[in-house]
Image (cartoon, rainbow, N blue to C red; front, side):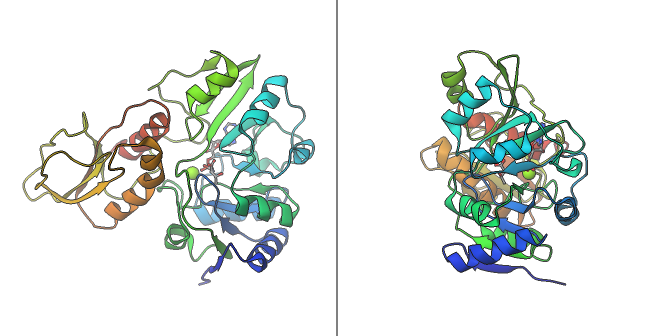
Length: 328
Ligand code: TXA
Ligand code: MG
């Protein structure tokens, strides 16, 4: 069984080696500002197939292609519209993924046979350096086994896929912690396909009011199954922060608290506080790592407090709901 090399991303030699692995058809896990990605040369269908194999990801779930410069778009997409370009001006590099009509250069395996391709220009310096050095666009889903919680540090990648990747670039913890927002533009209005770290308010600032997605509705991009981001331990979302669940006798329960609890909680075996002040950015940064820590304790059930579905809260609650689906 192979074991991934973990190298410090701050060393240019690590980037050089990682780029060489990408160019020769291998898999490299790398940090982005959102979560760690599992990257392969997006133009090489055999390399991309290894991503699906490593993650056990169903082939109907398309991948995001990561680029470092706008010039790379020419190779990948047929055209961009004025709205697309306005979004790129406002949010690239950064955590916004835009779905665009694909060119034939993009292998079908990348897009699950769709006629569109999802493109993102990450802002993380390590992701950028890797794409530039590799000299090819990099297809990358989150670097976790399919359906599990996304990784926000190198250790998470090692835990889940350590025997399936050639190299992990360790760039520390991801500064944002939830995945990119995915949008597509049709007839100059914008459709939100996945809520993420660019908020609806930020999109509306750029777009006016023509963003189609009501807060709290289920937004599903192809391949985004309702039960996704799931822990092994069943998760129940509490009715309100501070609500006391009816815990069964002998049930060993954990609590995912959005802010510091104002009361004693003797009924929980473990409590993870995502932000002492309830700050949504801090909550987003910590939520996946905290879920993983609670999941490792072998408890019977995890209770998660809800947060306000404003701003980043929309993406945070989307991920928690997917985690909780069918485990009630
Ligand atoms: O923040 C992120 O976006 C991270 C980092 C690594 O960049 N990546 C990520 O990828 O979250 P992944 O594979 O976990 O999610 C990609 C999702 C797919 O499940 C699908 O819902 C959507 O992107 N997608 C990809 N191509 C699409 C397309 N052509 N049309 C609509 N949605 C698409
Ligand atoms: Mg994912």
